[in-house]
Length: 220
Image (tube, one colour):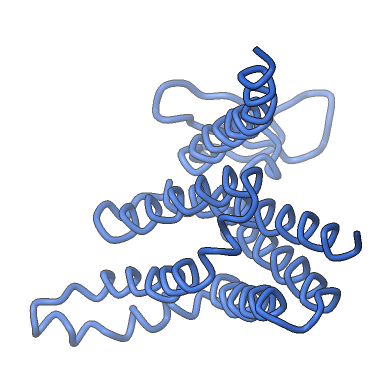
């Protein structure tokens, strides 16, 4: 009787976390589909500029200009946070495979942070139209982002699987990342940027949990 109850207690936090992520995903999906149709002093009691927005073409409402979220900026912040967490963990971890794991994670997330912040991949894709002469749509180059991620996951699978709590977030982040690639290549939807934010956030929490658990074991 105690074993199922203990298992349920371990699973419940993960389910709650996934529910929170699902709510965040819904919010981020809604935001890119909010279009400004009017801007000005639309409210009597303030001189502040207000915007009237159209939500999914279903209804309009008034909103502050800051209500619209820049998903690229949010993802850059999440990747920068991941870089900081992984760098700190690498500095505190004794030499060995675990330090290599955090070091590679820090270097990869730093590169991804610059790529997202300065849209380096997009710049390359914009200048690769010549691939169309060979029947290869340039935008499909974005799928190459999955190659280093897949190599990292396979090479460090033992570390990634060492924490059940972290695995909830890492798996969710990986699924969201794969989904964002599908959207980017196949549908070119604005939802893709929002999904990337959720994916990066899940990975940040997962890596942080691994760092906390493994460093705690190292100090005991």
